Amino acid sequence: TAKVTVPLLQQKKELRHPITAVTAYDYATARLIDEAGLDVILVGDSLAMVMQGQPDTLAITVDEMLVYTRGVRRAVKRALVVADMPFGSYHTDEREGVANAIRFVKEAGAEAVKIEGGANRASLVRRLSDAEIPVMGHIGLTPQSVHRMGGYKVQGKTLAAVDRLRADALALQEAGCFSIVLEGMPRELGTILTAELEIPTIGIGAGPDTDGQILVLHDMLSLTFAPPAKFVRRYADIGASIQAAIGEYKQDVESRSFPSEAESYHLPTGVQL
Ligand code: KIV
Ligand code: NA
Image (cartoon, rainbow, N blue to C red; front, side, top):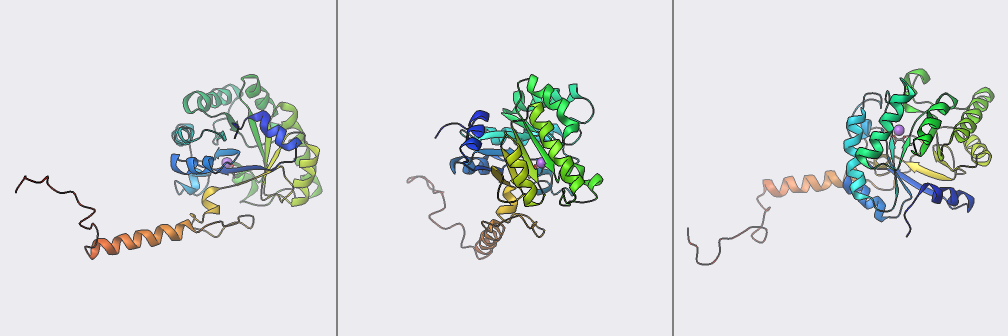
């Protein structure tokens, strides 16, 4: 099947074919996801939490994100590889934001970057688009705004908040975003934004009517250690599988049933000790 590109995602919206997206942070999982035929692989800054055990996404740096992005890049042949711009990498000035985005393309092979924020990012989105870097927007529950929001809370629950999010979405589209992630909002708002925008929406906790869906891989596989958010569907219990496998290995080592004769090397015939 054909390489996924920015224009192909636009075409999918127009044909009403759902866009499939998931996060990945390493070679092995990215390879499995790509072979499963998903459209978009996001190297999300959620990796700070699920891969590094940090309490939020704020501390991760561009240099760290680049390491993970390179591993994903080496694995992926078909999906569109999108890299998350971490907190602080595009908040000081636009020049620096563009320079950091260019690093994701040049040093890690990202095909697009994602930034959080609405109308306040429109000018940066324009600069990035001028630099030939496709930009995915991200509005609603934006984890880099955790301190302003006062926690990870569903956004867009008042008419004023809905109006702001509609204006944000349109501003991002107008500025050149090729797609927007809608996170943590009433499904009714996901429906309206998807209908109002010409570019594809990718939802996470935004209901079933967005043009695509994204989940954090570790959430959907139960490789996390806190109760999941309401919007997470658990497709496997990989945490339990890993724990069972490691427990068996421990038992086999302790009972000396591992390794077996067949799992051992031998001296060549004729060589005697
Ligand atoms: O970092 C991330 O995983 C994300 C997705 C949840 C959209 O931004
Ligand atoms: Na993110």
